[in-house]
Length: 65
Image 1 (tube, rainbow, N blue to C red):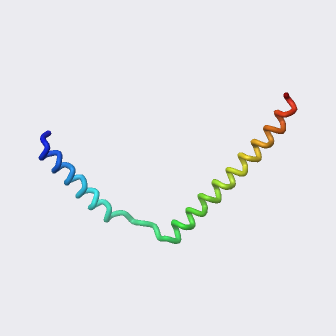
Image 2 (cartoon, rainbow, N blue to C red; image 1 turned 60 degrees about the vertical axis):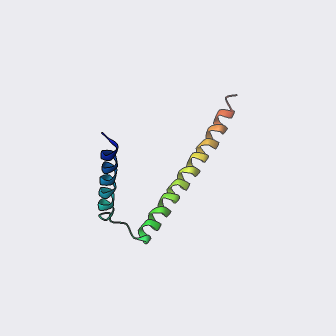
Image 3 (cartoon, rainbow, N blue to C red; image 1 turned 180 degrees about the horizontal axis):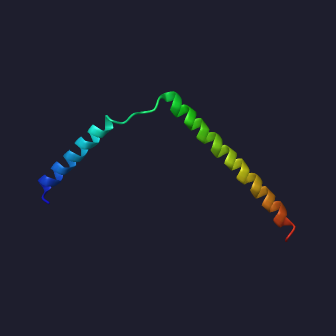
């Protein structure tokens, strides 16, 4: 493959990307905000749960030493 073919391949690739970009259906701002808040809440809940389990294991394993 020579340099000219490479350049043409790159151009064709980006033309395809541009064509597909227009077909994307973007979610509404409200939906993105709601889903982001859901993810943050779930991460917070799991973080607290893991922290509590860590404290519990430390307490139980403290009796073994």
